[in-house]
Image 1 (cartoon, rainbow, N blue to C red):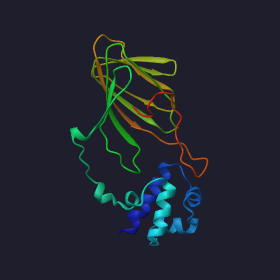
Image 2: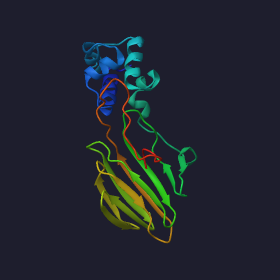
Image 3: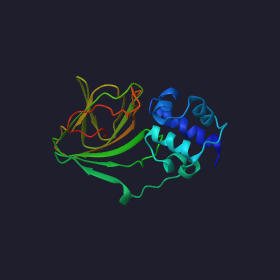
Length: 204
């Protein structure tokens, strides 16, 4: 096992969760000096220590020690994609695989004519969303601002504001959202869950 690669993986996961070395030390019951040495690739941790680190990061030990080289190419076939039907008749397809340490999501959504997909909460500062419309009309709402996007249009916005999507047209609307969602710094050793509008998914 490449110690530098493993250390970088732990460091990336810790940063994704907004954790300091001290936060992870408390959550994993591993000393700060040991964590620092492991992240720098200077010390080979035992399986027991790695398991504690994985627990502190909220993942399994196998997920922690999976090398980056093993994840260099991940093919997600159409049949493997998660298709979710939401109340109101709209549908979203999660195109990206779930990869520990990567907070990027790419989702295709289809809104029936006149459908309002509701609101999403403001995410942590540093979050970004890119929207591209394939067909129909998409009404993008950012707090009190509304922007209508037509087929072929695209937009970017900082996702640290309340935002929503709706189809004001008479035909279905298909659009893609590429989202880089940051997570707020954890206030305790327990996992942090972003707030969301009741009854709504935490992602597009």
